[in-house]
Length: 118
Image 1: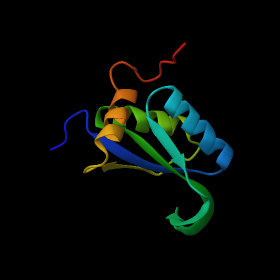
Image 2: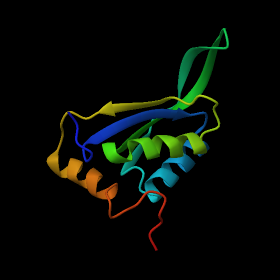
Image 3: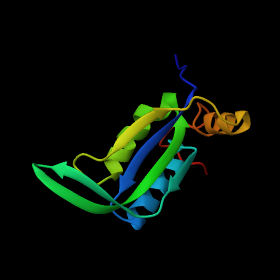
Image 4: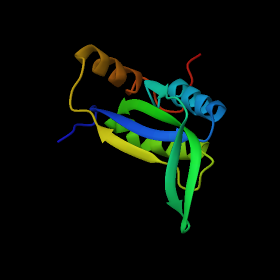
């Protein structure tokens, strides 16, 4: 059973690097995510409206607390142009205690989502 301060990984993608960078910037600056990694472009193959589609996309890996996961997913959807963007929330079963504590701190109550630091 996860508590509300457990760390989760959220997977997504973007249709191009410029948008991926913008999404990453907003999510970190607004404290929805402690860290966002952008991967190398790759081709995604999927069925959409009965047709096989293939598109180059940028993988996005977002680290946040379980308490912020729903808000991050909603903000990601606001920033994303797809009708149905890929968003998967995965539990983190362990890791470096210092890193996990840092993720929790960056996305914790001291940093309400959507609020910029001045």
